[in-house]
Amino acid sequence: MSLLIAATILAAAFQGDATSGARDSGSRVTSGDASASLSQDAARAWLRLLDKGDWDASWRAAAGVFQSQITAAQWASTVQAVRGPLGAASSRVFQNVTRTSALPGVPAGDYEMIQFRTDFASKAGAIETITLARDGDGWKVAGYFIK
Image 1 (cartoon, rainbow, N blue to C red):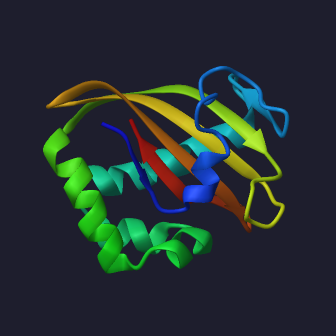
Image 2 (spheres, rainbow, N blue to C red; image 1 turned 135 degrees about the vertical axis):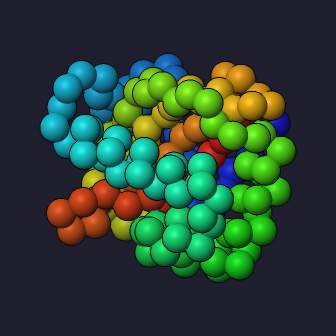
């Protein structure tokens, strides 16, 4: 099962090659880079909202580009339909982060795509991909893909 939720254009920029390394428009970061740590923290905090089923808070915490693609009600309906059958997350392991400054259909900026290997009660080995956009001093979720 795979599903793309919100900010389709953002995730589409990375689909297919997400685990294969650096892309022409970005760079892959796998070490203790401070910025990567901050974005990973932001992604994990947002994912905790999903894990708790707090759909409204996850929508409010997302980047403007995310919110412009889907209403809070649409998000809640869509994410419930996808995450509900998976059950509770039992583990989530960081896989990689890819940086880029250009994505199709959005303004140039600082973006990072982070992947986690997540085990859910009903699906082991899912890959969660979170695209983040730099927003001021921090990072906000601009897209979510689960496969």
